[in-house]
Length: 230
Image (cartoon, rainbow, N blue to C red):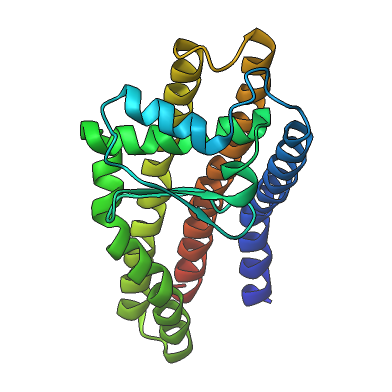
């Protein structure tokens, strides 16, 4: 009965974050799909938009590649390459230019030494390692009754929480840069700006949900640890 009580309690801690995560995925997919059908006034494609923004910031040496997948767009800070999915690279929709500008914003952050991005890049290896091994250590420790092992697993998972939290200002800042540069370069008008904001806000919600889920999972793990100590 005590075990069942703490499992239910842990699930209730995690449930709101899981609901937010499902909603965020629905929101980003539906919003992106909606504005993928809205053509931009200027007719610029995603790659043209990103190229113009990068060049305006003196980043002519940053290449732009096309990759497969859906919403797989990202900036690779290790190779200094901007990668856009086909629908964003070739598309001239409001969604396409908004996503392209956002990823260009990450390249600008990197070039300018934006502190939150530097911190996130520095802890990526730690967060990746922690996400792979933390749960293994925690549940092995619970099974063996090794409290120290459980604590190590929880401390390792804390790196994942920190990574998700530091991601928030990075993403918000990239979106604000994107909108400012799109407007400043005359790539969008007033109505299109509203559409870009909706697309990028929906995308940002997925990062908020990821941070909330990480925090809730951390609290759930603390609950499991406390159960073993009683």
